[in-house]
Structures are given as structure tokens and as C-alpha cells.
Amino acid sequence: MIPVITAVAFALPVYAQGPPVNEPKSESDLGVEWTDTLEAVRAKYPDGEGATAGNIGEWKIRNSRQIFDIDRREQDFIAFKFFGPTLGAVTISFPDCDSLAAALATQVKRWPESLRGFMGPVRLGTWNGRDVMAAALETRDGCLMNMGLD
Image 1 (spheres, rainbow, N blue to C red):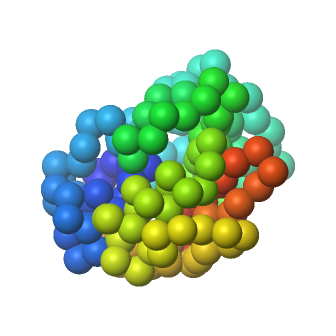
Image 2 (cartoon, helix red, strand yellow):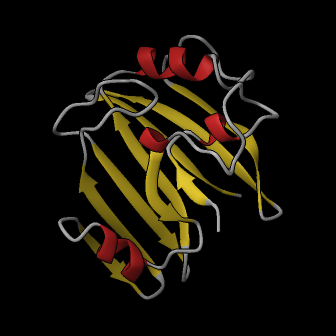
């Protein structure tokens, strides 16, 4: 199984200059896979919080570790989203969009070097025959990057 990584761009040689999918950067690995259920993600991150309604759910964790070599704050989070039985999207908060855009511009050829407002969706590659898409949104408190399967 292929792990979900915060920087799919690091793993897709078509759009990235990083290692191939089977050699993801360890600091980028979230420890979850696209095939994980909500229960599996809860078991991996028991300190999170979330809600469900049928097959739709979210599990949110506070996480300040570096992603894309960007220092993140203690209030930053990662939200795992489920639109069925398995993981469908991941949202990651960053302190600002400029550092996110600069980091991604070196990895994803179609990503701009600066970001104001909204950017996306950008196709990062494919996983198991499905497109992996990403978008980013500038917020009052920083920047949100959403990555998911189309």
C-alpha cells in the first residue's frame, strides 16, 4: 500500500524532483494510507477529535511538525476527511501561504511561487488510477492546503 504523504509532490517524479513513491521523505509521511478507514486513523492518532455522520467523517489532530521544511505552529492541524469508508482528503494548516507556495513551486512545476487568495486545483499525479489533486486557500490565520483523490 502507498502511504499518504503531506507532500505527494515529493513522491511523484512526473511533477517533482524528489524520490519516487516507494521512497517518500520520512518527515513528510503522515503514517496513513488512502485505504485507511476512520477507525484506523483514530487508532494511529488517538489524541485527535472528530465527528461522523454515516460514512462521512473527519478526524482532526493538532500537529506542529515540519512539513515541506516549513516550521508550523502548535495551533496548526491536520484534518483527515472521509467521504465514504476510506480516506478521501487531507487538509493541512500552515502559518502562511508564501512559505507553502515557495516550497511547492520547487516541487510542482504548475504551482506558483506566490499565493494570494486561492490556488488550485492542481493535479499532483495519480494513485491507483485516480488523480491526486491539491488546492490552497489563504485564510486570516495562515494557509490551508487540501489534498485529495478526484
